Image (cartoon, rainbow, N blue to C red; front, side, top):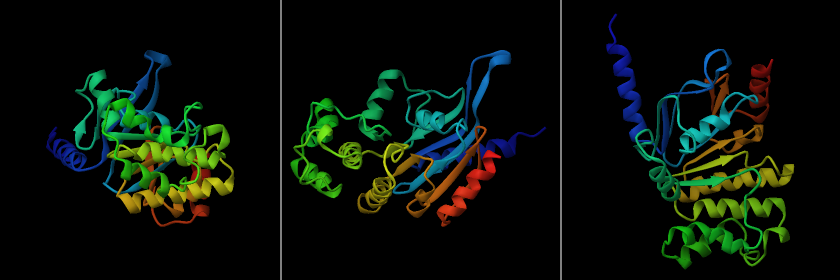
Length: 258
């Protein structure tokens, strides 16, 4: 048996990965051993170009969160490689991964994860404070204004609506100028109107700042803002959608859940 085609295919995938903001090459993740083993990911390869907004969707248990955690360096694959900004995560130790997440990665979570005793502005600035980075006041002001919080910067999270809190979280994710922002169900804790506004804001960030964004979501309306939608099922990417309606996305997800 000749292995040359497989080797050539992997070499091409790695070449693409090195030029991408974030990527995976044949990533697999198994939990447990023997008869009780669970394969959360079964050979996922993907590449997200710089300035691209990509959504990962699929039924519950399809492996979406596992994939996000591996791409963000929060979990390690059983096999395969993940890359952030052209750097392989496989050879990094825990300290190196921590520094990479600090310098290269921004996070937006479903439940905002804001510190309640800090103002909106202080929450936005927190990553800079923790890293000891120089505070660029002009950039801080620009980011706060761009997410629509210019008149809310002194308010604490309890004084903000859910949509406003998520805007703070997005500003916090952007403040370090990361290579990639991972958004994990960013509209999952919001009403329909606020959720739509957050999706539009993510699109605006990609367009205005050239920000690369990978979001895991159940929201079909992401089709209006995403460059591509990757459908995940049983630990594999089974379909890619682009330029489709939210109804088409919903139908595709329903088909996977049958």
